[in-house]
Image 1 (cartoon, rainbow, N blue to C red):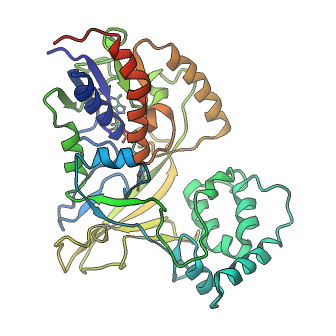
Image 2: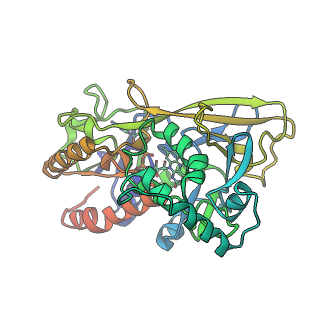
Length: 389
Ligand code: FDA
């Protein structure tokens, strides 16, 4: 059966489009991915030594306020409640994150009320003497003062971005709330949960449809691939791979940050007592340690072994590096504008997902963006076509 729609990339964006095209429009959809598994970065598998579910591309915690996305995804997996609560190791002492009343009181060795803490931080912040706070460092100091900034943000963010924090935009910080309560849930969303049977089962369930065919290990951009860009213009394509690669880097390469993971198995049932501990100090080379057993406390994991993953952050500058976070520097934004003009001109290709649009997307955002592509662009186009078997 020849496909009526080709989806490049079996991540959440691609799988949502494929499922919708098959169900809403009755299309035969071919999904290609160059990796050997479904799910893109939202993929997990059992650690071979402990059986503990480990997220291969860094920890994934599902959260959303979007009712449509939540209802939609519940068709494919059950979820168990899980709220990610942060901790930070600063000079050998553990503090709760995001910065909240407990962090502030522990840091100042105090028992301040919310109002007193606000006043204390206002006082610290008032010592900021610079102009408008347009960069990360100035914004942080103008919000919470220098001591908390230097303890919890400066070292960590320097390790994350390996750049002068005065060159990072202020928005990088505004994503992290400061709370004057003892709530240290990382996200504020109404729904915070993990797929009950893991990410692999969730992704397989999305692809499990008689009109969806998945072929793994196929690189759409390789001239020797069994299905490749030679089909462009003849079959509609949704492309969720890197946009610069699609155009042969014609406008220059977009820059990304990547992560290196160091996995260790320990002879104990609990290494750190929580899912993630950040390491705030610049002298410690890793940014955080993830202990995956804590993501599913309801599971029967071994009592005498546990697995942890240390994360190290760096620029993606070596061939084969996974692109994780868009750097979004001034030159990247200029290149992206030029790529957008090329995307507009590409016949019968819709670009989407985090790599296809050069945008950080959380999982719920990838699903919402895919549904919106269907609603606003693909469905109207497909309705104008006569679709036959
Ligand atoms: P995704 O990258 O998942 O999929 C794209 C797919 O396209 C890949 O499988 C790739 O192999 C394939 N592809 C590319 N080029 C191709 C080609 N030429 N031919 C064939 N296939 C090709 N979100 C969240 O909600 N909570 C969280 O806690 C986290 N945590 C997190 C940690 C880290 C370290 C990262 C990097 C990201 C997160 N995320 C997250 C974000 C989450 O991973 C993101 O929402 C999804 O990956 C987006 O799905 P996409 O389908 O857009 O891309």
